[in-house]
Image (tube, rainbow, N blue to C red; front, side, top):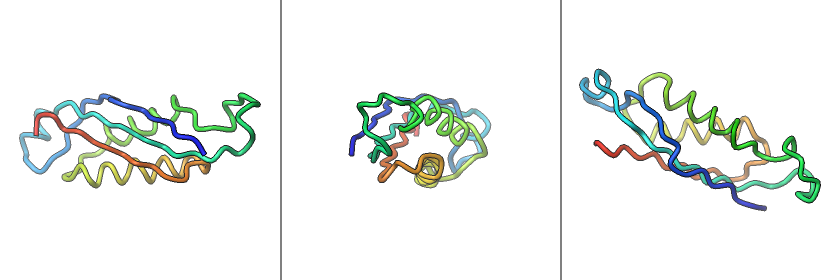
Length: 102
């Protein structure tokens, strides 16, 4: 097993309970700590056999910049579910969503 950490992935989005949060939007930061079980030995250096963090970033971006959610907890759960669905090698996904202007 090994861990891939993606930190401070920044996106502009419109999540939150208040109407102003949807109207004005704000910056959100996402960290993903992905525990991965390699499907083949890492010595083969094959991008096809691991979690491509460029694709993982795109998955996160699509969710965060997509439809509004009231809770950042729901946003984090959706990111975790999407990443584990996209990459069968992920055994654990720890997602942190930060909303600096809460």
